Image (tube, rainbow, N blue to C red):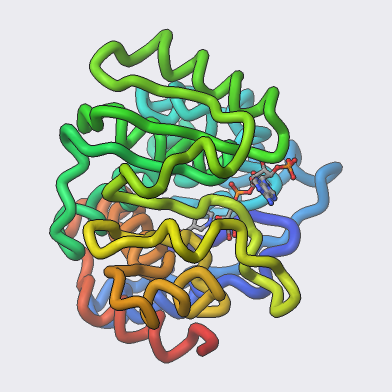
Length: 277
Ligand code: NAP
């Protein structure tokens, strides 16, 4: 039996095992996707044991997306640029790293939501790991402008400087306040912070800034409808939670491991069943 899994700490809450195990079963691949919850001091030994344990692939989540990089033989160009790996493939004993968060986000945005970021003005809240993947994806697609706001202003500035070094067709700006995002002029608003996961979390934006020409994309998928998304819904503004991104990154990881087309419809159905409302 082939073994795959998710590496993280914590990782027990993950929806990935259900999604990937359903896909393996549907394609009659004799494989199991497990949870590998490892403490930081166990990371190196675990990664060195993959070949011996017959583990052929991993997803990587918090807090290891950056920490696994020194242990890999090869890292894709995109993962290098983002500075994070969320997928590892083991072949001939060598560990190869990829990032499917960025192309997963883009696949969902373009193919499922019908939004082409080329030439668009985008407001991005957050400059952490997920925001970085999203911003790289949007720059690759030649968005016109990306305005970025993070509570930690140095983090936003560092991300902007890195994007400027690597992409010349997109204007990228770090804003000092959330008002600086100028959502009124944007066609895409993205929340890439965890604010919205808890009931008591505040709404980060001015409700009046939402408009009919905007798509509101919240990367959070638990809960499925954050305060931000419910505001957008009530105002008749197009909106999406992060389940589609989660699905698409999973589809891409599955295809990297198996070289087979992933059963996306089935994986989507499993995620909807397993995610909380
Ligand atoms: P992260 O690395 O911790 O980044 C979050 C960033 O948001 C941090 O820089 C944080 O600043 C900033 N922030 C916190 N509160 C803020 C506020 N009020 N205003 C502006 N910025 C604020 O987390 P992450 O890994 O990027 O994940 C972010 C969210 O995306 C999580 O909810 C995660 O579940 C979701 N996500 C979804 C998918 C998907 O497939 N749908 C994939 C990845 C992540 P400080 O450092 O100062 O706190």
